[in-house]
Length: 92
Image (cartoon, rainbow, N blue to C red):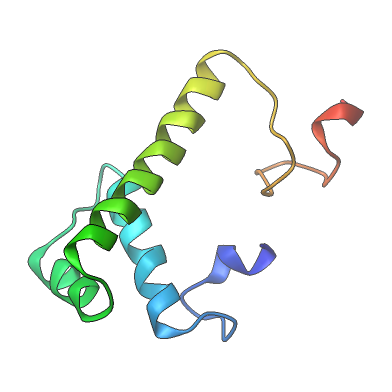
């Protein structure tokens, strides 16, 4: 999990995993886009159904993040947040 901050340079991720992370960022960040090149590279690894499923999973995680933030629900400790000391939500 800690390697996700540096996924582009980390040797822990293979080409397919890097592509999925690139896609997740393109879907998630409003200043990025899923262009034709990225879509074609996804098709090198996934069929259309798998891309739809992957997109749905990314979208669900984005929805959950916004929902939890709006309701001020605490993190469950699955990822490191800026300023987080590594303690789980129960220790707050």
